Length: 347
Image 1 (tube, rainbow, N blue to C red):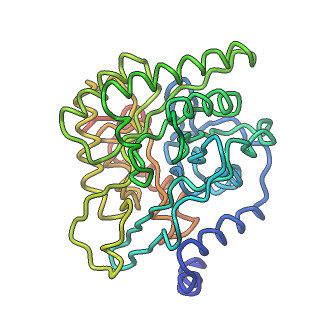
Image 2 (cartoon, rainbow, N blue to C red):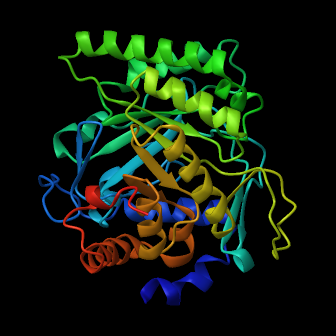
């Protein structure tokens, strides 16, 4: 209710400035050590125990400034980043647009972040599930080497590593989804992750792979085959789309990745495609257009073990986490499931 009252004033700021205000505000949320995960929504994916299946998608907390505040709001996990080896400014501003009429967002941020010296080491004692989304610098001569460097740097700090090869805002990045390039990339990241584990007491975070919604059936099959072969922890389905369904906002023609409500149907169908292509053998994280408990429940029933959101928080505020998790618990009991894991893929 409070956010609903404040939202018109917040929306007077341009989208990127409002986002900065939101991150800075979360720095004042009291945080402490996270308690062990218990309760009916607790689930296990890739050897990690999640207090509930709802997470914050990468892009909100690019530099790992407020992951514990996000967990305090009621999210089961937070994914920070994308983080690249060297700091970069990203694309020219303006580069983030609210499409209010469509409850959507278009961004062409371009992996703006402060670089690989992330601020996450200070939170190691607090527990909680924090994934680190890693990327490559725009001007890198060897992008696979960038991902390997980030895996080495972030493996000791991450609950899981999310390899982001699906942002539309770094030219040529999505080419890493091609079969040969993807195999080479994952071999490099896994090899470095394993070496880092040997050096840092055996902590070996699972690798999650974030894919685009704009994939052909042959791409889905190839990525699924590689993911299974490399024993990845999960596939994150999906990133923003370069497609443009019918939109009403005057910002509809802006270049960049579209997220929010218009992505919902495409992301759901791509999730179903990956569920079928992997035969249910690979955990999936459903992302894109999730704004309600019913949206999250539909994604879980379609095959997602976990779900994430970001754009919906812009329109509904920070209370969205507790609203959705409360609703998920009610839907789980309503439909006769004793756990979230039982419901995965049950449609």
